[in-house]
Length: 205
Image (cartoon, rainbow, N blue to C red; front, side, top):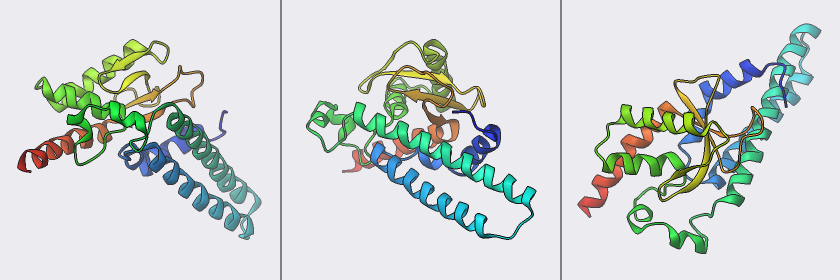
């Protein structure tokens, strides 16, 4: 679906929500996060419709909120799909996850956290690890499956709206510009730093 305010709502998402969303550990958390955003945005739409603004001002603001609602719905659809495709940590399939990963204090559900773990094992610094992750996205281009060790096969793609600082991932081949879940460089860096903390916590026990 194309939005009238695509660039604007995309920037709103990146500025206000993208990093927090990328740091969520499970797809269920993503679903609840997006459902909460949908509920709040729906309230904003209702309140705006009741406000006595000029027709032009009202329609402009309403159009942005409605497009934002469509963006949230699109991401919610993706999160629900990914929850069906990938097993949760509570399911029997969770037994397949390597002990050294599943025993960490923070469950790792996102592909970049598994990627980070292996980059760290090879002594690769954070900046270089991000470059390597983008290289995988260049190779995949949303069409070729890429295997993340201990996570599985996925599709990666550079986000054309921010080629340097954002990568998209999906369990299925990309078919439209709305497909995929963002992994921002900020979220990647935070996950890299948090992985260091998790390892230190484990060694202390």
